[in-house]
Structures are given as structure tokens and as C-alpha cells.
Length: 321
Image (cartoon, rainbow, N blue to C red; front, side, top):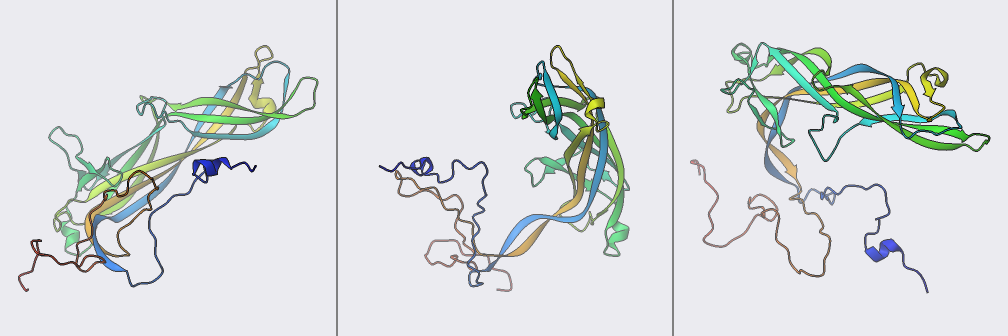
């Protein structure tokens, strides 16, 4: 009797895989017969600037867990790495690593509410991440060009990072090497006294008069970290308590930050499309039909848009028609 593969029994075909690939739902047969024009209402990037910032954090006598125990010899470091700490159970955890860009501008201003706070609108990330910006653009409007504004950026970093270190060790009176992984939490800065990195920039703003919408200013950052021994020497940077086996290490942490700032404006675009996205559903044997998630296309110039029938509202006609 042949045993069935567990993946086949569950019908997943890949449940044992550690990683996965995405499904966009966009398929194209390689021909142009189904390509049509579609209008979309989106945000256009008018101008953007990108900055790479660097910072250093010393972490002397960082204690790692678990303890090595007594009689363990450290041979070498197999690997040392760090990553941002984030607690998914509490987004307001003080230990969560935060990057808060604080920007002031001259030659213009951010639009305020009656309480003096910046007026923010929803950005493409679905949060209130964009500020309305006001600049007297009349002079440059006459030349059909944008108006420059100058800004000062203070990037505040607070919270913690996690460090993992793989050590090659041998027990006492033995030459059998093994690898153990130790970890530690290092605070970069307290949220009340964050680490601050500063730089300056210039960005271009379109007209605030010849538009139905004020331009928006948005900024976002990401951080990576690199950790190393302070002097690159186990003998100098490692301290092992012979009684408890607790290991403390002198470290230097490099903070690598990328920040991008954009001026965006709402626009309408005509794009070439092969039709609405349709994702293949996971099959079930209980229901025969399922409801739609998006309406059918009714534009008569699009695929599947033509149709007859009385009692339906006709498309709007222009005065020239």
C-alpha cells in the first residue's frame, strides 16, 4: 500500500514551503485585441527628493541571553545581525522602533486647522500621511514653472532593535563544536529624548491657484541596521562571567536611514488596460455561485461594456452632440 503525501491529502500542494509567491491576478495573452483605454483618478508625483542618512549608536556591556553556562569555550562568531523591534500586540509599545520625520519649510507653509495643527489628508497608504502645502506661486506660474521651497528635516529615532549572535562554542574538555544563538535588546533612544539626524533640502511646488486641489506634501522613511563588535576583537569586546556564564559584549550599531519627500497632486490619467482583474478563487463544493466583488464595466468603449435593454440610464451627452 502506497502512503499518500501529506500535502496532497490537505490539498494545499505547498503547505510545507517556508516562503511563498504572490498572485496579482493580472494575466495577459500577449496580444493587443483586448487592450482598451481606462480613466483612473490617482495622485501624481510632481517632485521628489531622497536622502540617505547615517547614525551611530554605541552599546557597551550589552548582556546576551541565554547564559552560556560554566565551562564553555567561545571559538568564534559565526554571524551577528540586527533587526527592528516591533510588538504586533501593541502598536504604541515604547520599545517599538519609530522613525518620525519632522519637517519645517521656508518660502511656504503647511495649511493649519483652527487649533494650529497641520491639516492632513489621506495618502495612498490609507492613513493621514499627507499635509496640504501653501506657497505663493504667482511669480513662477507666469513662467509655467514650479516654485521652490526650502526645508529642514529632523529625523527622530527612538525605540529598540533586536540583536542575534551565532557563536561557535565547545564544551569544556571537548573539541566538539556547536553553534548556539544568543539574543539581546538594545535601546536606540527613549521617545522623550530621541536620536535626531538633520539635513536640508529643496523641493518644487506646482501652482496653488490654477488647480482645484492644493498640492500635498508627504514623507516616509525606513531604517536598516548593521551591528559589529566595538573593536572587532573577541578578547577585548567579550566579557564572560565564569560563575553564571553571562556574556556581555561591546557593540557599535550603524543606523542606515532612507527618507523620501514628495509633492503630489491629484490627477486623472488615461491608461491602457486589459480589463478588470479577476483572481481565480479557491474552490469549494458547498456553493455553486458567489457574488461579485466589483461592478461590471459599463463604459461602451471597454471590453464587455456594450449591451442593450430599455429602462437603463444612457450615458451623458455633451452639448455638441
